[in-house]
Length: 328
View (cartoon, rainbow, N blue to C red):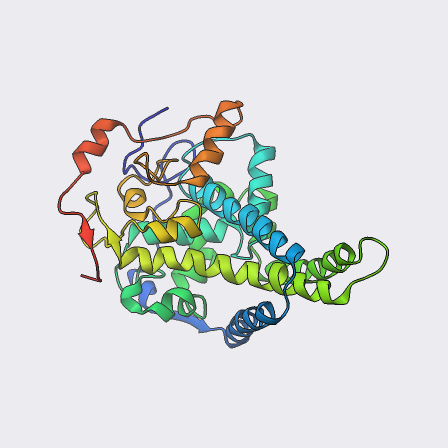
């Protein structure tokens, strides 16, 4: 394993294309997307309401399975593989992981990687970090994807932040909101049909179980993953521990509860201190499910060039005191 410290972000070379847009872009909304805002909030409230009244054992199990598959697609895929190149896998597996992440309906890897690299470049800088809680909790969970800044949402700008991905036809196809909405609708319909067939045991169509699957798998899965990742950007910049030194103004924290919800990505201070590390739970007691999956891929020879920080690097960045209980 190689050492992973706070080196620049990028693909195999470890470097990223720098942001070259106008410095004023960060504070200027491109547009307020009213239709998307309505659909996003309506599907969030609708998913929660339907799930409260329509539930079944098979729908609950399916929710856990799809949440895990899509969540790992985001954490070990979009985040650690694509945004930070913490490890390498064969292209066929890279594409498979990307599809799992895309099914969470959080845009394609080009946009997601660009957004995340912008977050690291301008962590907690108001008007530059896409989703700092210093602009409010609503901004983190909804606002930044509705009142759209050009450096975040204009493809001619954000694609330069993930230039190593734009030549892949699959990732280019995923970099379209039209395709995002089409896939979202397809997954909702597929969940209804699958639930109905499972509930009927293959002999009849169970409409009630179909609605349960639509609620839990088609709607609630997307909502849960969206806000679980939102907690990384809100809670994990407000409440938790900061055992490692990061750059000035960086408020990233480690939060055990968020780590449970999102497969280890809640060890956010660890991550900001060592962004290229494939392992974010840097202590033996820090649960990191995404790292365990990467480790298993490494053991069977599918993951290579796996980066983790050396003990010396950990020692250099360790600081005291570490406890943070508020936004200060």
